[in-house]
Length: 370
Image 1 (cartoon, helix red, strand yellow):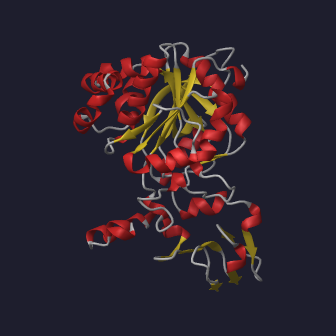
Image 2 (image 1 turned 90 degrees about the vertical axis):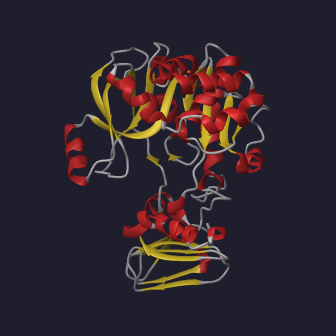
């Protein structure tokens, strides 16, 4: 199947989350999906839309918070009127994706939607699109389909998808039944998963008929499905209905119970992927020309102007953002993020804990810095 001939395919981009592990670069008012985090001249949101456009054309729906509507509109002017959906408040991924599905269902009853987060980095984009094309072929059978990423190491920050038997579809040779979804494991468990060869990272990519998604949701959470379809039918009721929606992730609402009932499939995705969840992972996705060599053979990855970074006998990642020189001497795996109003100094190994700074700032009445 050619990626450019996907009939009735609609791309949904949930654009939410504050990216607190990337503070002070990512803020509540300018979250990571609105930023160019890999130095390509396009934000993560724009890059997501760019790689989906060959699959969906103009069939693109974006769901974001009300505070970010104007910024999203400025970055994605191609999104048609009525297809940029503004959440009055966060209600987790099921409400966001389900609302988009309900809107699309009314526009195109035969629609197949693909939901892809706004803030992930994907390489080998032709391979990505081929995986999506296979997922669309499987979704034609009224299955919920996810794309499972080949694990490259025993990651403890991702959930995993347990593969069962191959589906054996000619149009989807890399499609398998899903036995179960499993939560983020400890390192020993993650290593055991990799040894079997039957586990994939769960990147939160879902492909499914809009109608099927809402019908499956109705099976497990009937009130939520009914409310989402009602909002799509009567948009003026959004402010009154939205606050009462159940707050639940799509994994828990649909993927996990549907997998237990044998309705979920996974297409293997062997393309590079990263959710850029913290500064440790950011260092790994920055382009090679952002690398500043040091005299010891180590080096520093830079997001921004590399001429503003001087590294001696050091390694790590630096984000120079205050127009002053950042000099690093004798430090390994350092993380330095220099902005106009905040300076972060930590290590790559502690990068997952950066969100605790945001929590403490809020608790101390300094939410303006978050």
